[in-house]
Each structure stands twice: as structure tokens, then as C-alpha cells.
Length: 433
Ligand code: ADP
Image (cartoon, rainbow, N blue to C red; front, side):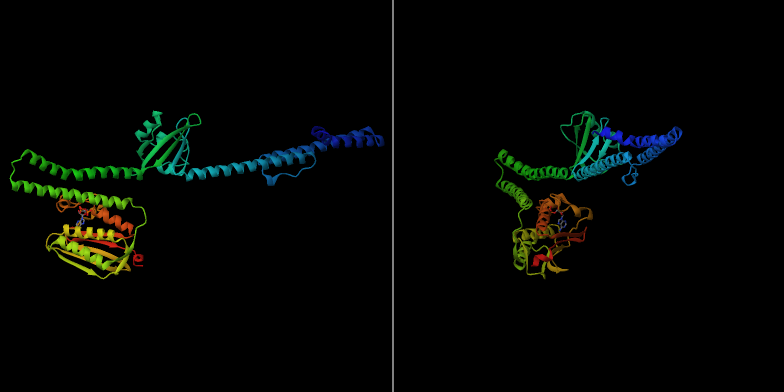
């Protein structure tokens, strides 16, 4: 028996039974009684169905599983099919919501900003990083024209160029110091994904690299030009007096020494910066190290300063002796070079708040506060000519800073113009273990 037959049997069963009862009534009473009974029965069936229809209509207007009405007979089938349908629908809705949430979590975790643009370049959605990069609002900027939100001319030109092979590097509109690399990727017909990547750090490194090359070339050019000039003079004027030749050779030697200093500082810095292997440490005997540093300084000062060493700190710390010596010597040599004759220079090795500290205090020219944060940059000098006159390369504090980093130490600088400076290297307490 197929479903349709079953349906018709169940629908017509009350009427068939009613008709049988009516026939019985007819035989017992009369046709009027039988017909009246049949009429009443039909009216009751109609009323019952109308009521169920009403329930169905009412429930459909807010189809929730928990409020599905109770019904009898054929209506049970209808409501139970509807119940299953709504349940399936709810499940699909929940699955889709979970899927959507996964996609949202994935796009939020992307290390790039992503904006989906429709065929009219209007924003369809964007991830949180794109909100940051372009200053967008994922709720209120939906369906806004991207050229209205990101107004930089270079971006608009890029968008309209239709050639997206190369990324565009531009400044972020709302963060002047952020540099973005952006790219448009066509998808789904006429739509585009706008992908942004924060390249601020890379740009900074690239700028530093360019500056470094320019600085090194500049530093080398000056002594080379001087030496070259003397050499040409010597070639052009073979009759120069012995005295003049000696003088020229003396000046040339000075310039080549300068180049030698520069190259050796460059090599030291490059070795320190490129050595990523763990620092080779030993327990360094501070007494012998500091007396060597002190003696080197004494030779450099050559009696021009009041020069002293106080040794109160731990007798040994863990570190790389060669590097520590280089850092300490650089600080001492700076103090001597930037302190006029008659000034004082104090070297101190002490334990301060449980941390070993090496400091060099001078009564020299001092440094204006604005320069202090930049002193450890390569080739940064407050007074270029004074640095050169005293044989400076502009790399000393960059080297000290690198060595400090490798020893987990901090370089502290306190200075006032005219009053002198104190450069301190503060080592971690653990370096005494
Ligand atoms: P430089 O070879 O020029 O001395 P450094 O890196 O050692 O290079 O120092 C950077 C700059 O810091 C110097 O050019 C100088 O202007 C300043 N400086 C460093 N030490 C002192 C100091 N003790 N007193 C005054 N200025 C100093």
C-alpha cells in the first residue's frame, strides 16, 4: 500500500464510519435523523481541521521546536514532518554559524590585513589587522567605497591601474610611522582582495643598511682623499725637500691609521652583530682585567687628567674577557678624548643594589640630553670634527652597546653639558654566579 492510499484511507475513515452509523440510524429511526447526524459529523470534522490549520498557521509564524503543537491523526504526521524539517534547518544553521566562526577566527589570525572588495570597489568585509592598517571599522564601513576610506593618491592610482603584479609600498594613513606593502588580488569575477602587510621594520632595516653603506663610504673617502692628494703631490713634485716629504708621510700615516681604526671597528661590530651563537663565557678575573684597562687609559691620558680606579666590586664575573675589555676600553678612551686637559676621570667597579657595575665618570664637555638616546647608533656623533680630531670612528658606543646586550647588561648614560658624563655598564646579579 503506497503512502497516498494510506493518506486517503486515514483522511476518509471518520467519514466512512460516520456514513455507516448514519445508515444504522436510518434503518432504526428515519432518513432525517441519519442525514442530520451525517451533517453534524461533517461539520465537526471541518471544525477540527480548521482548528488544526489555525494551530499550524500560528506555529509557522514563529517556528520553534519547543512550541510545536500536539495534534491527532493525520495532523500528527504533518507536525512531525515539520518538526524534523525545523530540526534539520536549525542544525544546518548551527553548522554554518560554526563554519563562519572558524573562517572569522582564521582571517583574524592572518598575519596580513585582508579587505574583500566587491566589483564596485566597496568593502564587503575586513579582518582586524586591516582595520588597524587602514583605520577601517568592520561594522560601519561595510559597503563604503574603499577610495573614500583610503584616500592616499598613490593607492587610488594603484587601484585604478589594474596592474597588480608589483606590490605598492605606502605609509599608513592614520599611523604616519607605519609602512605598508599592499597588493590587490582579483577573485570571483570582478572582486578583489586587498592584502596589506606591515613592512615598517623591514623598511627601517633597509634604510639603516643604505645609511650604513653611505656612512662607511663617506668615512673612508675623507682619509683616502687626503692620502691621494699627498701621493699625487709627491709624484708631481719630485724635487720636494726631505723635510716636506717627511711631513707629508707623517700626515699620510695619520690618515691610514684612521682608516685602519675604522676598518678594525667595523670588523669588530660586524663580528659582534653576526655572531648568533651563545656567548663563550668564562669567570673573568676583574682585578687583572681592570688594571689592564686602567693602564691603557693611563697611556692615552698621558698625565693630562686626574685619573683613578676604585675596585670594590666582585673579584670575578662570568663573561667574555676580550669583549669586556673592548667595552671598558672604549668607555675609558671616550672619557679621555672628551675631557679637556686638567679634568678628572674616575673608573669604578662596584656592587650596586646587588648588581656589578663598571662606570667611567668624567668632568669633560658633557652631552646635551637630546643626543643621549642616539649615541649608540653607528656613526652618530655629537660633534663630528671633535670626534675625528681625537681619532674617533663613531662606532665605539655601538660596539659597547652590542657587547652589553650579549652580556645581558645595561648601558646607562648620565650627562650634562659642561659638567661631564658618567657611562655605566650594569651587569645582571646572575653574572657573579
Ligand atoms: P666616537 O668615535 O665619535 O667617539 P662613539 O660611538 O664612541 O664614537 O661616541 C659617539 C659620540 O658620543 C661621540 O662622537 C661623542 O660626541 C659622544 N661621547 C661619547 N663619550 C663621550 C664622553 N665621555 N663625553 C662626551 N661625549 C661623549
